[in-house]
Image (cartoon, rainbow, N blue to C red; front, side, top):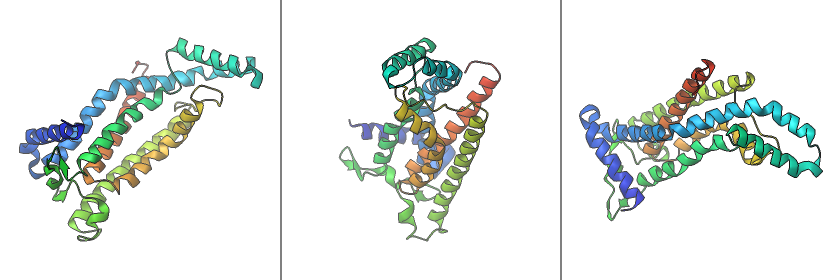
Length: 252
């Protein structure tokens, strides 16, 4: 059985389990529940990434001292080795913060494929006909515009999705800016650190990626948009909770 078939069967069974509560929108609720299960499974990685961010902030003075001891291109190899040893001693990595996002990408891709394929495992994909408030989960915003327009019954479902994603994105960006202003956010690595180029771009772009999710939701199936809304809302709430515990001096 293919990965698509496995996910389709799993979502269908979740939908059957929650149908008494959500009726015709049971499959949409199953997509949300599946996303929550994925994020619960990834929580240990998220905690490790959060601790890594805080460790990087704490190591910033030591990094500056290492750069002072090993200045110039001639000492680049010594500096890189010293930085690696420093991170190993602290039990963290410059790329630790990327892991939760990277692990989620294949899951999102499979979800996208499940609600884009007309047939799965040689059979018609019944999930495409399931809906959220009457809007098929396999439909896209560009498609429903021709069926009632922006403020038609299907268009309003997408507008509600976009509004929810925009609200989460705004809150995420606001919290990220406040954290960085307070010296609590991710610290961009120096240019001579291992993985600096990748991690540096991630740190700078990550807050804006919240609004990139809004653009993505406009072109993917409604079910994939629900996945994006759920995972971004989970991320925002999870980071707020971890920050609260950290500020309370309770190790997350």
